[in-house]
Length: 559
Image (cartoon, rainbow, N blue to C red; front, side, top):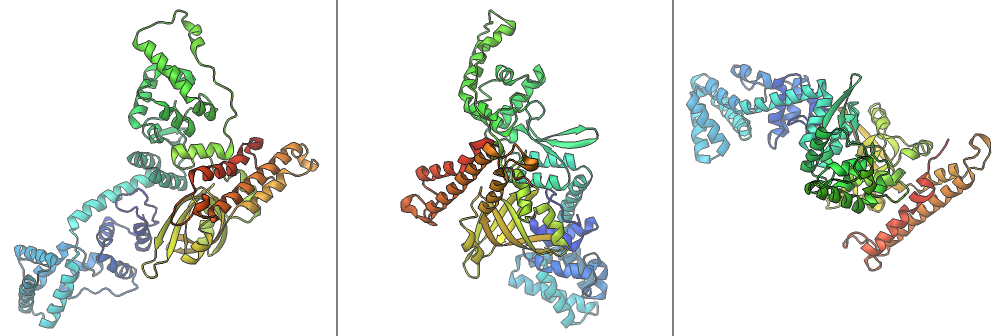
């Protein structure tokens, strides 16, 4: 917990809470209880005081010697309602009933009641030898804290669950991630967060497999190493109940042999066309049929076959030929080139919600290295050791713009994905104005950032961002090398194909940018009118992606 790696831990998973954990370095359930009570509007202003007193950077003030026993565990900071009641008992002679009335009065802050309680508190304290000035000051301070005081018995119960879930994450991470992802089965954004956190804990998350995965997230152990099996029910447009039906069929009849065996056994009322397409895009059928595109583009044919088999089954008809000749009724699928590279990953992204089996920048890793690009997994330890400036690269996953409360200008939090993980950059107003067109979700960009490391947390600030055209030039040069030296046989037609692919990709990006600059009247992008018009914008996007289908979509740069 002291490291702040508490994604998925009860009450402690927000970014602010993780930052505070790194500062506070909680070492007991009592300190977790205090943190949960302090991390709320009002008492939050006392967090730094609590931390400074804990580590000896500030002197602990117990208000009065008789209150030391009550305030020792919270370093003199009044956090709990129980402390307010105990102070009234010790310092002013309140009974338990009177102390509870004081607690209620301080929570409601009614002036008449507070005036009465103040007079009662000062009188009781004077009888115990405390001066009016000191007791009045203590009452005012207690009243301030009591306004937001938390019930310790409530906070302690929360803290116990926080400790238990933290222990599970630290000691049984595979099971922890499987259970946590199950709780957010339909929330792909949260699943992406857990997936990245699992990578940090060295817990593999295996892609969905129709013959291995369950409807929910599950755990697989092989040779003493555990992994999370991605849930079939977490794939978009398939439905949890439909996948429970699939698992029931598999458990009753054994593993599916091929895609037709699957279609012959499932109920088309449960597994419809959208579910079939989603499973294929996500790669769930890869162990049965590796050509995902073939399944998606001919889903109508496959579902028609599934429905015909189900109709025969319902009418109790028996195939007269029987045996292997029964397979003669299976449709013959048209031959199509499979999705490769970015196209395959784009389809997977649409079904899963994030990149699971690979990354669009994997094939460009060497070219990125030549550009002195640092991936986030390398940047984090470098930033913690003092490095500040980085050239990074990634695919834009999301951009969240917000307005400054002080100036009204917009800034943005942009989440990037690279082959090693995800990172978030803050783009201040000036940099956002300059880079906004580049920072479109789905775009592959180079980004120049400044890193600031504090209390074990690294934050990135974007200075500039640009499209990867220059990097594609490098890939172009690598593919178009003449046929001599160690790469003999890899130039020629393949190099020419790569050259044309890069050229078409770059031209498509330029045309798309021209559309955006041309304004709403020409089908471009206008801040007030939203995205590109369906007709022209779709054509440009098709042009941008045309390079991917050429020469197998290969743009792998070689050293």
